[in-house]
Image 1 (cartoon, rainbow, N blue to C red):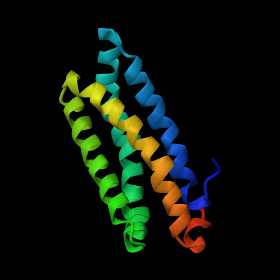
Image 2: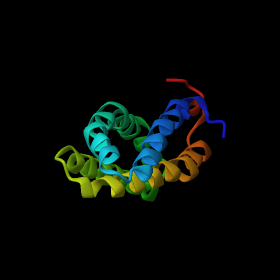
Image 3: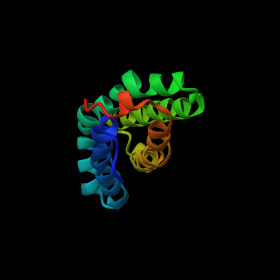
Length: 132
């Protein structure tokens, strides 16, 4: 789906997240899980956290102001969950890896199918058509 310029980079960021979620879902042996435990915290810090901050700093306040409080609350709740799971993984909690991967996959799908679609419907063109 073609995204408006203000959402394009956020949508592109989702590819990295989905690749990571797929790698987590496919990790069944100890070596693959150990590799993910070692890399997920860095990937989260350098790829996912900046994405969350961009949404929280610009997109979500605009959606809140446009009356989309429920979507904003869900997004923030999911960000909190993913941050908590990433922190647990960073502390070596192997049991948090699979829930993190599933939550990440579901979060990306929610943003692409609901959050961004709503943003494109309710936010002004002056915002949506400005490439950041």
